[in-house]
Length: 302
Length: 324
Image (cartoon, rainbow over all chains, first blue to last red; front, top):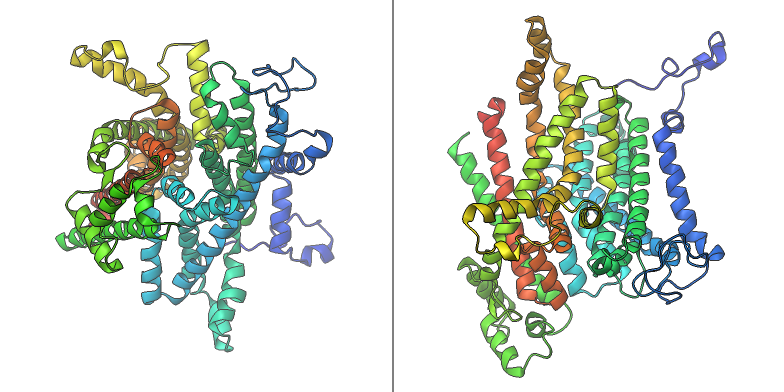
């Protein structure tokens, strides 16, 4: 693999001081990322979604469950409800601004749960090999067999739908891929010389796993974590759409699900929340692709 | 491919399915509340009589291991329990609805592979050309669009703007007694939107994957040889390169099966498609647990079978793996 060195970096020609300096991989990755237009677009869109979700209420008050106007008011016709109202006369903009919070919270926490389970099991399997690997991989395969959405639906219905149950359910069905990826990285890295060197100076297994191998396995895992957020957001949206989310919390999926029966009378109540979900996941995956290009120089141009 | 490998693979599949049965069993018991009440579901107050019958059938008064043995024994005999909502065996409910789901999932799978691979191959000819850019953008969009929302947008579009495809159900009421061919065409007509909706997500993935896979292969020596021999570009792309690029696509196609079932669940709900996904959704709303668990078992078993078939077929397709 090509190492990021001064040769690959555009060093100022004729200046021996800068030509000698080796750019750190993190810095090079940042430089790559910051020149990647789609990735920056992703950052911009995600920032927009986050700002609207976090601070939107300060500028645009209103309870998303409250009936504020006549039902089916089309968008851009009434200043007080800019994007119109749904079948009950609830304000779409208020729904959009508050509906992102549960989706994003669940998305991020589910991704976190996925990464914690996946990395723990994957690193143990990859590092120790043998029966540990065998056992853990069998468990992983078992979870890959379960149709994720169906299993998550079962978990959520059996154990009352709260944001936590939903996040855990999504985490429980999504970790196998992360575990496999982590295992593959550990299998590759543990054979490298610096790991042998660490072992030779007497480093313990735990230290080798956490301090030596994991940081070097980080780039693909970071990319995978980003994409997992996107998947988790889609998952949460799907569950709320089916009416399996927390019924007391307005979310984008719930807005679509609630207005589904009236979609032929009014297109806007189902269209805008869907756009919001799309923009969020689109932004996250643009960032993921950008990180992938920046962190895996070998894969550039794919 | 040796017989012992096939047997080992099958044995392992049986083990996985057994695991699903045990998981199903545990889930019902782990749920808060009396398992008998959970199984009866919220059907407007189950009478003590029904609860007693459930306790009897499932052996709920006996030790946990005996309960598990009874449950496994029932499943082995094809008895997935009784739906108290439909008052019918769950296995019969699934049998009635499996056809439409298979039709939907297979059509979407074939559609997405054919179109996706075609797009990917076209894009791989010029890795930096406009077709490649289109595939990349399309793949990112396809990944980011919620599948149920695609369905809803298509319904709105085809209901009001261009009403050329039916937007719900599997057949028209007025054609129910028509000759077989007409009914078949009617079902195909109804299939267009749901199948396309389900295919979009995977189509994008296949396009991206086959582009990457093709680029890998196109850089290899034998392609250079084929070019040097003066083979036409089309023959090189579709005959020499695609055959070798197909293996990773095949692997992913097999692994997608579980995701397709999850997607079908949403698509069937949106389009009122009378399959097992719709059944699962309705059962969850009614808290009809025997049916939900039956569908979960059945769908997982289907994924296991699909995985085994994929595994065997790519070992068969790749001579390098055949010997192992």
